Image 1 (cartoon, helix red, strand yellow):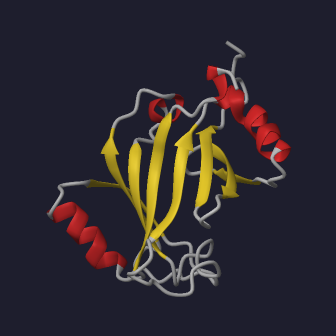
Image 2 (cartoon, one colour; image 1 turned 90 degrees about the vertical axis):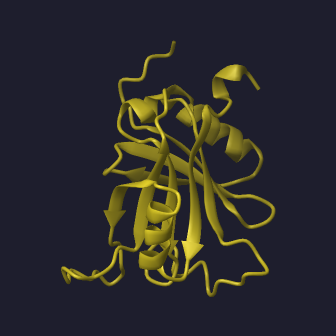
Length: 163
């Protein structure tokens, strides 16, 4: 594998939480993290103005990478695994004897997206392709041996140069 297709670094760490409001307050108050984005992605949709978010992104540090240049800092994301549409069918309960890790995202270069897709497929994996319009990003998702989802994410740069 050439260095061109090696992940650039961690893009985000996503953990399942039981109480998203309390968890958000903890990370804001205790660690001083700032909320970068909050979304409510319930299924069915909950448009009530007082509905708590289903996912909260907290900025950890700026990133000198393509995603970072487009507003996606290295982030800690808190996800309400019981209400968030993408998580609620995958996680039945939070067992503190096991990890609450939802997924681990590694940033890749936009030009390596299809290379990584082919590489994952060569291992017999069928990567899910996901787009994140709110981040102008796209990702490849696969499960690793311990059932943790790994995400290879990049800025959705259709104009990505081969250099």
